[in-house]
Length: 270
Image 1 (tube, one colour):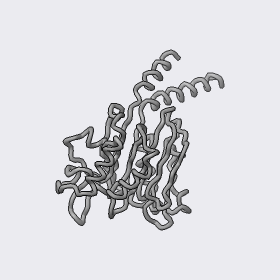
Image 2: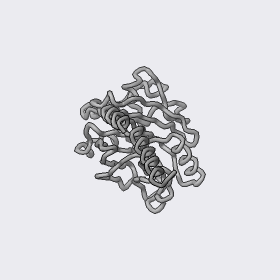
Image 3: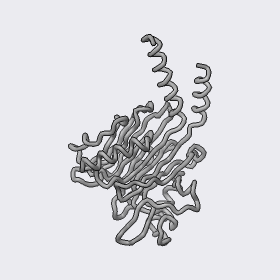
Image 4: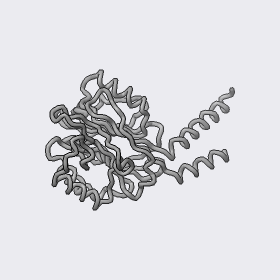
């Protein structure tokens, strides 16, 4: 095979790959419960490669700003982090090398409780907010953060993370009623046209992401929220078990249909 033919073949493969991933992206979120152990980092990296998400959001990395270089995953070169000076909190967003992502704006919390990125993914605008809410006063914290970031939240926003709070009685095995703070948080989400994608697509399924040994209850405190205008783009959302953390992960698949058809037609023409 001549050099030129080789290059054409490589270009064809790349273009085909781009068409394949362009219309469909996946976002995974997981509270990793600390990444200071090299063995744990190795296992998390292996798990990310296996799940192969377009975007991977991690909470509770426990990495300090000076240690953030320790988080490395082959195939996810773009890694954006918000870290705490103490070994606590910490969030990270990893973006796959397979996609065309351009960051336009980044907001980081110096306590390592959240990070927001605005940019384009395959020419589609996207705003992604990755949150780790504190154990106490979580609903209040999330509500306050939504108010602070109100100007940045739009139709293309996806909010993920460990919000440390169930949003409905169905999100706890105890079926305990939700308190005033959670009701107020839900009202704020409603005002901002934000929906709990898992509950919307699985109205009757009780799925859990966390087991509290203190209360001996399972709950779903890890969430993926999106704008209700995009409900037809949210193809699938599921809970994925993870063996190296005390949380399970959540995965969302998004379909950009128009782009997909356009890409596929162009590809046939080629």
